[in-house]
Image (cartoon, rainbow, N blue to C red):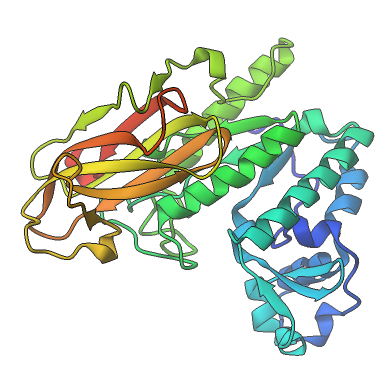
Length: 361
């Protein structure tokens, strides 16, 4: 039996919407019939998360924070007034009142800049009210495939690894401004459930993932009770065995006939606008165009087939997922710094994994 009870719950509310001004509209004027959906939509209009946090501040031991709904993006209603472009808003019909308003999509530079300012304001609020030490950020990656090993395609116009890279950039902002705990799971350990009650999606996980989250939370609780709590699941810079992307590029051998695999690693870069090349040694790819698989063929023999991966300045986690067409397999993957000098990019905490059907999760 759980030792905790739920004191409050807020859904479908982007942090960008929450820190902005109130949108003076009534969710009850729309076509929604579900009280839960109406409450969520009105909460987004009102920016209710701050009031909710203050209501539970004295009683709450933990405040769980999930960034998943940031994927929805926001609609700019007026200067400093935003609403989340949620399913509830669309289904309510009230989005028709906002047809001329700009949709600022998740992952765009405009959205990212708004996110940075929103996190800064949220950090000030949580510090002022003694809430920051209670915050636990769920940092779960989107899965590459379902629990039967079938690779997942784009959703919200993003492949799972693209979404993970965007989310990692947003999480880096949280790390910069806030001292909170994190619940992290390696990408290799997550899979989507084909029988999930809300349908198949990279963020609708199989039961095992939720069990791992619960176990990690127990570890966090134990650490907190003993006074050792910190950023749970985070590998510190000093703990990593770093290697130079130019002088010592890592190469991974891949099991025969593998067509789906993923790579997760940490990188720290001395500057911005830096690229890595993920060089693939493919078999069965001669004469094929692999653009829809985000793979290009280089004229340079030592690179072969490849994909670019852009790096931010500083340190964060990166993801790359590959789902090759039938008849094509990969023998090896090499991560190389591209047109940079030695010492500009260091790599660590690297993990390559293959399709769950092949038993390598």
